[in-house]
Length: 190
Image 1 (cartoon, helix red, strand yellow):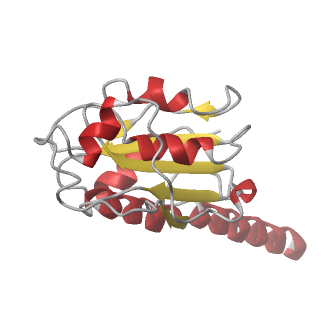
Image 2 (image 1 turned 60 degrees about the vertical axis):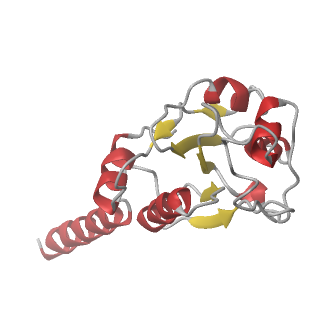
């Protein structure tokens, strides 16, 4: 009987530990997760940091080789850098930093703002810079009010078909840890 009690306690302890490892989300603890994001104003960065913190994931900022100035981001100026890039779907702004061990990650949460109803073309640069075959990509976006538009169509085309692509989730408004946790709890990552 003592052995039975000891084994029961051991099983309960292991079960509790396993539940604690995944208590923040339903993502399996054996998955290596990266939260990669591009942010010019800090809005997407805030969401990315909350996701990384909740998932206990690694964080990587996609930094343009040539940083964007406020003039570059002026969407009301048709000759601004961002306006010109977004008109040209083949535009691929250079990235100034690299993920050294991308092969180690199973799941990539990919964050960006919405520009002209799609992701900035630097996100296509990021997706075309690595082999994501067999990985899960979970895009999330921020915007002042617009939706994701054709974001998934344009971004998924920049990856191998053998990627488990999730639909882009909009994280607009006041993004809190509670909202992030609720969204992640509803994700079904395989």
